[in-house]
Image (tube, rainbow, N blue to C red; front, top):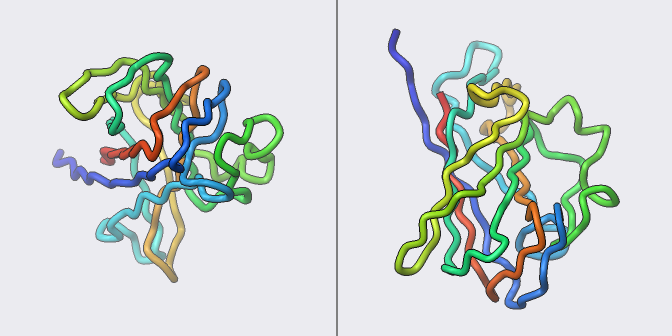
Length: 172
């Protein structure tokens, strides 16, 4: 059986400050700008415009080489979540909504880092709800299909000013 893989990319540049993140705080570009779009090629869509697949692996890079308390969680949805939270918003009070439950694909953690000369690379692990990858189905006829994500700090994290985060998802 021939498997078709697709790499999709998304990311953001943090604000030019060093405000600490608390456990499970949303990370992003600023106020109301934390949702990351991962556009998917519609080449595999069926006649109804439905695209389905499975996120089988992911990598995250960040531009600062500091690695103190640098653990992150990426939540993924098969549609735009109802809330785009503010930078540093707490999960319980702000951005995880019941209305988005049907869109939620799952989550993955980035905990183990390889430090390079000017960046840090993380491999995703601890996929939930399925260890073999995160299955999804998207119905998008009118616009290009995409997966939407939100990166959160797992623990207290002290970021660099204007730190850049890039994420690559491998989809089969």
